[in-house]
Image (cartoon, rainbow, N blue to C red; front, side, top):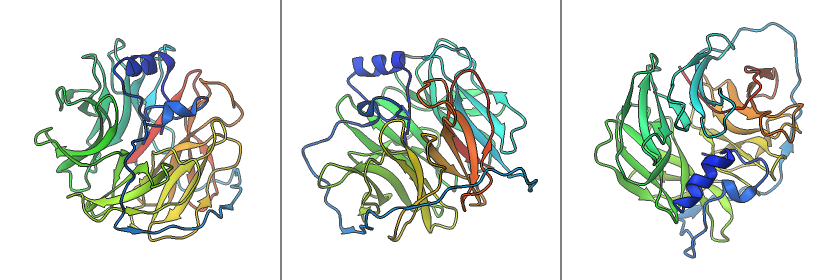
Length: 338
């Protein structure tokens, strides 16, 4: 989650198995988006702690015709109006070509992420009663990759296509895991942690966890579990983030329920900068493959309405805000791919 918002019935099911994760984008109840803290603080090899000063920019809505962004955006879509029947959908980055990829209305589907070659999508779903990781091609043909490891969410394929990073919940805590692309050789690299995303060179993972004060922050770590580094010192960070294609910056979101905003920040330390227009409860960001745009979920003009979330994109300089979806039910958890 990642960020990240979950419907009430799904949340109840997860609570019954003792796992409250960041599946929810986090609108009203902060606890729904925050895994249980542990009594053991994280020990960092080094800390990069930028100050809490935040530079706010107000993006402009424009009608100027510009070149459309490229690629596709996968997202969680609530097509039936039933909150525990979320599906996986995909749309072109210019707003055309909407397509539904999953069709099991008896199960919930979350956390889609597009493969680096753009030919498939990995996601989490619970048709077996437990959240497992699946991979589907763009025709909707799918394959279950995991079996009874725990509650699995937020899968993301490595840049070279060989590995998948994901979050595992065991009923008490969450941790960052890796496995081979076909689901074999699952192994934990760090815990507690959630919402992993890859560095562009595939050598590190960016994820959310607790600092020594049990506040949620962002960290990076090598694939063998070494070189843990805290890269943020912000308030009310949630989880779902993304790492820029040039490796120099990341985008995340933070804030109180219904008051969340997107922020960009240098990986090597520096001041966070507000990217989203104030007042949209913006969250769950994902960077375009060319590094020029960010996709995210927001509630502009519909704050307080659980079904008011839609997919937006914005340039990384804060200009050219565009809305891609417009449905009576919620569209959320976007992830950009080629």
